[in-house]
Image 1 (cartoon, rainbow, N blue to C red):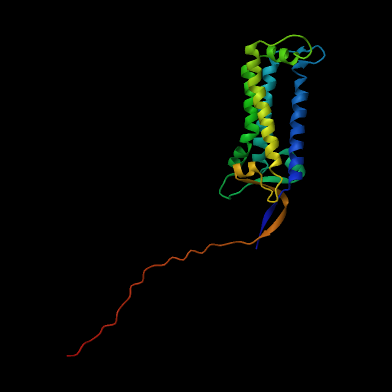
Image 2: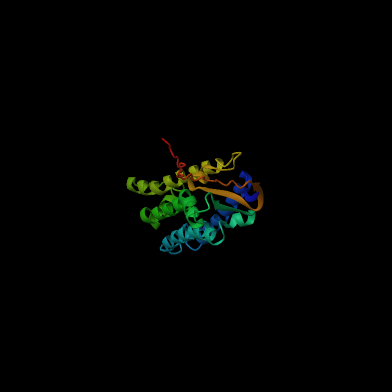
Length: 217
């Protein structure tokens, strides 16, 4: 008999996800005060806009890629909830499993913020943010530039909500678990598992020796 980590249930996984998101959102909002003067509705320095978005991309990489690799499959929220990510197959490296798992989250949001840098200038960002406060309108090309990252952000949000809901299973294995070949398990809770050993019988041909027979006439 052997021991394996018990798979984490939906609620503890949801709690860990919420903690991670709250930490990142708190960082994003607090750092935005270095970029925007909210009272005046303008930039402190418009070039800080690009620095801010680049910093958000960097923090996504740190929170969901680097920290889990350095801390054995745990984000900050997972550390608090005492759960972790492990590969389904022992031969798979943890770093590869983390990368595969974040294709639909961290990497997607890195792309979204990069699209804001490419398509949405500091002036356009402020103009779009003020659109509901005044009668100003965006030009057609400006709408397209704003729509590209915001539409992808909306799609990513709904997709990630769906992935989280998919964890509500008796098997405790969600869609993202299957896509990345990983499990989310308790760090210090275990179940018993029988070790199954496959015995392969190798059958080799055996030379058969016939007895010497003497015939008498």
